[in-house]
Image (tube, rainbow, N blue to C red; front, side):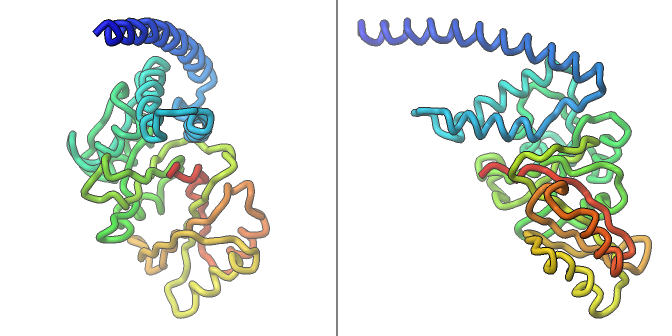
Length: 276
């Protein structure tokens, strides 16, 4: 019993020091928030988040697991973001819905959540500034890509700034689903990125093959692909995801080649690959 009491005393001392350091970190976060607000910079930085989590896992000597480190720092970062400003995250569905649980697992419990009635309303909340970011489903393992999300991506001025691949503990009913975070910011390269591009093509035989040829010619790897008929014209919409940040791609040459067979080309965002 004396050993137990002694070990608990050591934990109490460590907790006191941890609390002091966390408050010190929080004060620095408030200073960063003031700078961001002064220069109208986005509060949420997916590139910074990805680099921090990856660095922490690499530097850890155990016994904390990767998932434990992510969970701990998710709440630390959530508390820090909330100190920077009153952050609102929009997501479709009521409290407890799949999208809300995914958003909560991503942004933590210290930020504010706006539960929208539809995916379209999430985009509107972010576009009008009622929310700082939005979390929407992109792909469901049972039904493929979500048409409602693709329709909004086709005409929004917002960007995809991150992708979420939820683990089973966050959303046990669809562990293989894909979610995206939408916002107004444009990300800098993280060193391990992907880019989504929208191609609007005349809906006729052979048009897709011709439109995609520049990717093959320039040796650009396509990792995901979705198609949708435009809800305003007879054109076909193709959503292609490539490896690399848009700054890594031969963008002027690629856009020039694509324009020969596409009626519209729109880069929907470059964002870090989700941590696995």
